[in-house]
Length: 235
Image (cartoon, rainbow, N blue to C red; front, side, top):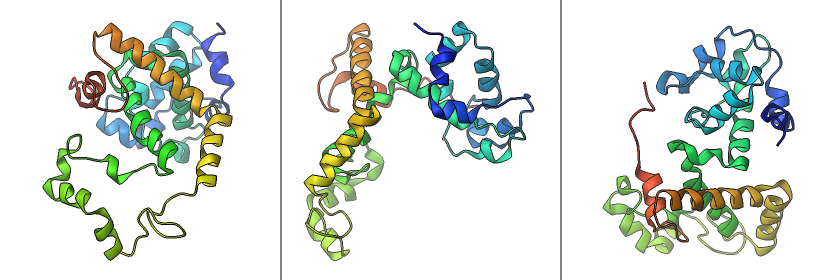
């Protein structure tokens, strides 16, 4: 396999995000995630610049690369024009491609995103599909949300939405031609392949943990990665 640094260089986000870091720490000082998580973008850039495969591998397997909110505050303040947020994007992609994401608690949650937001986009054209947000997985929505889910059409009609209707309007049905185009974009850009990788490596981790991983979100492994928090992420 090629050196990990060389693989990162193939990602345009990495090329644009790393110029020449002088370790001033301004990115960490401005970073909202660094205030909350055990996260230091300066150290991440420093690690990447070593070009050391072992150190970069540990980074790809770590919790660290999943803490960034990609707000790009780092880009606005860096005196050298670096963008640690873009470097993080490249690291996340490589971690998913190589399967290293399953070695961290936050990384394993990529399957949750793939089977909710990702699948909703492919199936419905919306990154947030309201009927997919039930109180079984989101109890904070409360009992009123259960009632809303039983009365979608009447509620959204009163709000002026075109719920699952043809033509324009909020919450309209996305036309089949547009859905085909969305799926084609995922195919051409490698999104589908990445989704396949996430499924493949997640299945391997589920087997390692002796947990069932069936389709959808109602299975042992999905519930485990969705709810587990080891309590070590925040300061």
